Length: 302
Image 1 (tube, rainbow, N blue to C red):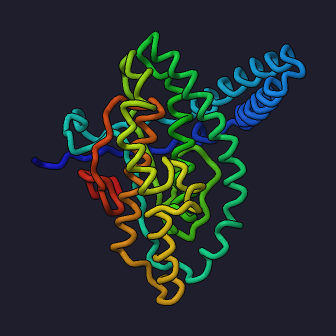
Image 2: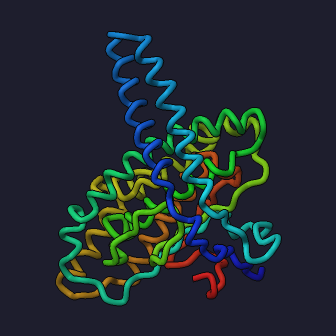
């Protein structure tokens, strides 16, 4: 079977791919208020105040996320009908290994990445709220609201860049940009927007249908797409990245065999996250697609 190109991004629109500061403030305020509401409701000190904080927090989070996602372009495939090829999954995770990596910089990336970790904690809180909200919309309409979809993909895209820079791959010494949008960076992530989604699968995808994958991904990476924070857990991924780092420290090279395997684990984890986050109904393949580019990707896409 001839491989069909997995897709490519549209040309960037610098004027609109920038994150709205007001929308970002709304997301931060919404997540903080939601967290405060959970604390108040948990203490049972003032349930009315807790409910008010919760409603306002959730509303701000969803409105802010929609505002951020509205400015992000959808990913369009290069050729119509490409996703009819069962060997190509409608989510693309790629990463190009830097030809020259510092021997020692990886020792301090945990410190350098702290600003990203702080922002990602907020964004992942919003990601969870958006996923639940989108689940209710999908249940009744069969559609994922596109601005919220683009926001969720943007969070995964940001997470993958940070993971690629830090202990999810150690594939680049270039500092990741602070943006949900596409950027000139050696790590990329895209998901094709679905025109329709199953009404009933939304009830069972994340906890039942995905269960076999979740067990495998837990063993391989210690978590799903949050590999930038799960790298400290003992897993095959963390072990491989550590071995690559030690070889890099003493030999000054990143073994390509290890890098390809690391990419395969991350690709599997992010595909499962896409499925569990209700972004696609396509069941992830039980396949470790190794290497820097997606299976079936055209060289021009990389």
